[in-house]
Length: 518
Image (cartoon, rainbow, N blue to C red; front, side, top):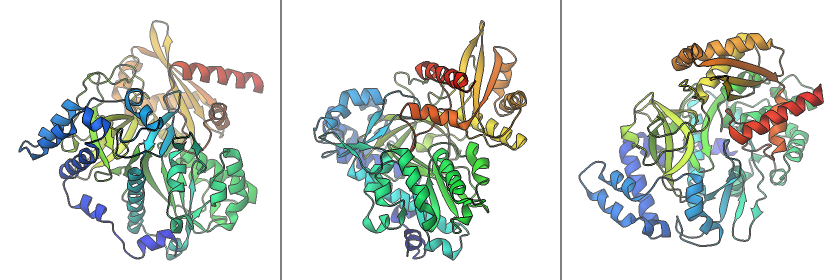
């Protein structure tokens, strides 16, 4: 019986799931931090920041004494700081740096804001936790109304190459390639594509071979980033001259997406189906598996509080972040029991991979504190507030989703830039769709939608934010830009906000494309 059936039909429920169901979020996170500190207390990092002293505070009667001691002893880190001070030592072959032992793997992650690739340590303990959380996510499918044939089906994971690069001291590649390559043999037997195809480093070759073989597979579940999964399914339909993907995979019932909001892709993906399927969200970053959707028909995810990660929450305010989304010195941070619903927070995480008070770069919002339900609202550097409009990626996604419905078009990609307009300001949108649409009407609709979802935006559009420009481009323009920078496929996402050098490069690229096509 395939993996899905073996988990669900036997009624297996992981102890970790029960623990989170029946333990307070505060107690789970206090225990998680204690375990992290105990494990790392004799590492170079642990000795430098006196983890022993912090651990003494766990015996205190004060409910947050241990947390305050942790914050007092350990500074906040972004990637550049922790890499320059600590992680470079791991890549040079040193052991017991930020986590016990030798770290064998590094996940390459450029995110969607930084220019150079980031090398994120991935320990065996983290791989184990990712597996457990992935199984917990799979278990939630028992809550869905799925036919018996689904449990006899396999799953297709569209990720990075399992053929990792070797530096001499460590292996590096996409996190999906690292974790897929480390799956147990009995699991790999039910996943697609084949191990041979998974090893391909060339994304175009990998897609070609999947398209050639996929009609032979019995697929019940898909997993991958929406942009590339949509492209794959479109190519399959074209290759086999069918009307929809269910003519090739009749048992397809579930698509697990993540990495970026699915809403801009929903209409385009719905068109590829012969009947509705379940969409379920996951929050698997290079730094760890942070959250997953635990019930059907939700638009929120449950934060994992006992999966090898301790979470801190930084209110996303001017007090804690500058106008470029950079974290200020000594930011305010709170624990899980101190958060408020409806407030945007940036995430700091400490993990079993040796991340400590690490700014992951995402912003989230609690929609149900009691059940630790969150939504991702954007990136700390992917927002626009040129004059107080405080426009988040979540606002942008909602405005685009509304416009897609209004015009019955599929908008797969978009990006936004803030630009000067005389002495005032303007936004310039670049919207990707292959459907016919009046650009001027679309411009007016998205502008009006943004007013509806963000009051601050509405105020500033009447005052300092004078311009709103919009260009409609083919989706291929966005993917070609990613391809030029070697960012095609796998876990790569197009940035929703462009600033600085990336914006200049994008503007130059769009102009080149226009001249070529003109």
